[in-house]
Length: 397
Image (tube, rainbow, N blue to C red; front, side):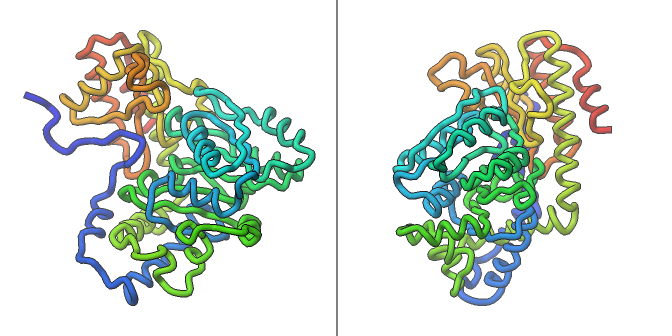
């Protein structure tokens, strides 16, 4: 006998829970990809995507995951031999840096470990020392999905403006767009990348590069950009197929239209941000209570530096894997692995897990997940503080 039968909860940090409305919108026959409804629908997405990003600039849509958006952003404004400064707060900053290296871009990495956001003073010092302005772009991850560290992008943009440094500010919002507050124009961000499968509540398969006129001017100075990654025809197509450099991701577009309606035109973006903030505090309240007795420890100690989309948790190996397995087999809940904390061949890999609380989530989903985690802790006789569920419920009240 198992209590896992019934609707499974995928509490991982992406792909996130997809609303039935999004899935139903995608459940249709293939549309005409040359004229008519799909063309009009695609045009309607652009202003709404910009509204989610708080951007008045351009957006290029790609068929691909977040790594595709990384590469698209890089090749439109950086050439081999150019220098990029990468602020690494976990696995994904290093991943973007490695992609840049393989494109021939010189990379300078500022390492901030796996338990904190970037240190603004160290970034300012590095940029101030760059008197010759050899750094062409600063690459930052707002929320590292592996560590759940959230960095202050607004402060970074303000510092770069005060220093009058001409480098582009490029930000990875793949983990947190439509979950954590992000304001592209107001924060001085020049390029932002995101994916469809997290806060936007659509299956994996689409990614987005948002860019302003400053970034597009640099694109105009590039001697060569591959036809597939070039953001200009995608953002300003003379013909519909140029949006995609070929066939459109037809059914994703219908799902995205429904998701944007839910986010912007029904709940409202500010309300979406507030919902994520409140539910995240419920998650933190539970884990902070459990951590009073036993091996559980939140990876990011300071609440101000935690994401509203994902929470990374440390627990003595092999308890992380044991707890994840118990929840999948007995409670119908799947937690995320401790990505980036170690390798699967390292025993420490089994001492981490992550909880995704992004996108289409509400109080009963989060509280149910937390109650299931407590059941797992109890069943596996893992020591933990008492009163976690009461603390989480109070945070939701």
